[in-house]
Amino acid sequence: MNRRDFIQKTALSTVGLMGFNALSDLGVKAMANAPDLKITKIDIVRFNKDLRVAGSEVQWMWVRLHTDAGIIGTGETYPFNEASSSAIKDLEWHSWAGKLIGTNPLEIEQTWERIFRQNAFHVTGGAEMRALSAINIAQWDILGQVSNLPLYQLLGGSKNKKIRVYNTYTDSRNINGWKLETDMEKIARFLVDQGIPAIKYCPFDIVGIRNKGEYISQKEIDQSLTWIKRVQDTVGNDLEIGCEFHSIWNLPSAIRIAKALEPYNVIFLEDMLLQDNIQASVALNQETSIPLVVSERLATRFGFREMFESKAAEIAMYDLTWCGGLSEGKKISDMANTHYIPTMMHTAGGPILWYASTHLAAAITNLYFVESVYPYWKERDSYFFANSPQVKNGMVTPPELPGLGLQFRPGLFESKDVIVETIAGK
Image (cartoon, rainbow, N blue to C red; front, side):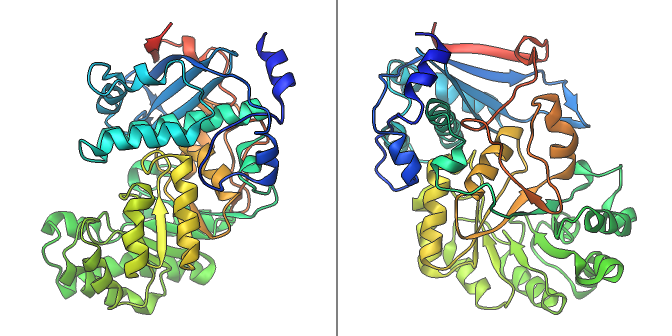
């Protein structure tokens, strides 16, 4: 049976023995009559280390799951790709790739649990969790293609969902070459003119890196606050401000910074502290009225459970290529919703992360914002895809094509800059 016949025969009829209520009613109907689908080959896709696209290096890798029906699912993770690819290729010990060959890719929950438990025996996280995230995203891509439905529909989402974005701005992810220190006013006006409602940047990182997060003086606080004042003096309340701290600070410094920011009505403080002591975040949260964001550095619903139960933050943020994939992102959001906590998605990685995040954002009901990076979706992603989701008036929508809806540029996988390595199967 060729791929076209297979899809026609099995449209709206697939199976994924999932132990959680991730699927919509439409998705459940699509699982009614399971095709006997099997993974036959696994590829890892990496990129020439010298490749630069729209001024950015390529930091991500793809995992491609081939099936006996000719359907290919693609997942993604980043960075440290040698470590992540080695985790998948470790056939002698973990046997991930070997164990995936011959299995049904639609058994998404069973695959996730099997790999997760294997990881947990040797400490959960790192390259192994990134690899599992990529595998999970690829499986969901296959499920959507088999069902002939975009993922957001399988997840119960709506194409009419208003998916708000903010723009993350760093000097390495700049617009028109503008730098934060010299061109803050131009950046703010540009984003407002584009209809983007919020910006996230790092006004305290220069001091934090210099001081190694150990101490911040009042003079240094005042200097850092000028970054906030310049935006508000230029566009007023037309552009909301979120602050990223990259977990640089100790607790007393974080409290001092948070109190200094309160008069400026910033919308969130992201990752002021390292993620491994939730009680420290609880203490910080009790000292400030500004919502705390924790954290794309956590993985799986198990990692977020303590955060929710201890009231360590008002906003949960995850990265689908780090947290365990689409399956875990949905579970984390649903768990957060039981605490009336909104969720955000970190997307400052590769293009498939951007696709996957838009699909899940269209399905959850406790969305705060999805992160966006203007030069990524506007310029970089078109090198790889013909249909990268575009932001219009501060909103984005997922593609309507089956699965993730990836439209690879013709000839991409034959390019000298693309390295395809088969690690299992033929």
